[in-house]
Image 1: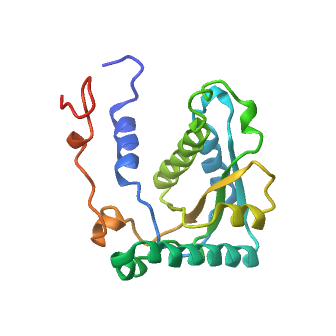
Image 2: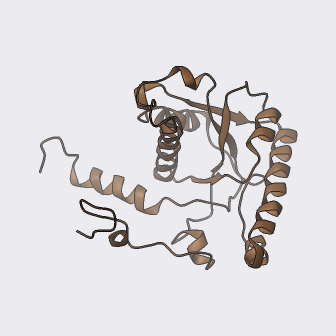
Length: 216
C-alpha cells in the first residue's frame, strides 16, 4: 500500500460517500447553516479543472419569486420531455424530477463567459470546460452526502431561458439547477431504479481492454 494512503477509516468514509450519494428529489425543508454552505462550496471549488480555468459559477437563489420562476421553467420542460418520450410519457410524468420548492438551498451551477480564451486542454476537446464544472458539482455532491445533506441535479430546463432569468452574460451557460438540503432519508438505490424507469449496468459491461468492446 502507498505510504500516501489515508487511514483505513478515512478511506472507508470516502468510498461510503461515493456509494451512498443519491440524486435526491425529496427534501424536508429546514436550513443549511451559512458556514456549512460555505464549506460545501469550497469543496466544489477544489475540483480539478482543465488548464486551471475554473469555469464554474454558482448562483444562490434566495428570492421566492425567482425560485417559483425556475420551477415553472422546469415544469414546462418536464411536459415537453414527456411529449418527446412517446409511449413512456405517462410513466415519466409520474416521476418526481425535482425538489425546487422543498429544498433548503437552491443553486444554479453555470459555465462562465469568455471560455473561448482558454485553449490549454480545450483545443481539440472544448467540452472540457463542462467536464470541469461537472467535477465541481460532484465534489459538492459528495461533501453534501458526508454532511448528511441531500442534493439533486435538475437538468430539465431551457438554458437560454434560465440564463435570461438570472441575468447571465452572453457566452455563459447554466448547466444544473441544484436542490440542496436536509432529507428524511436517502434512497437505498438510485430513485429511477426504484421506480422501475431504468436499471444500473454492471461495471464489467463498461470496461474494455486495448480495443473498444474487447473484454479484459
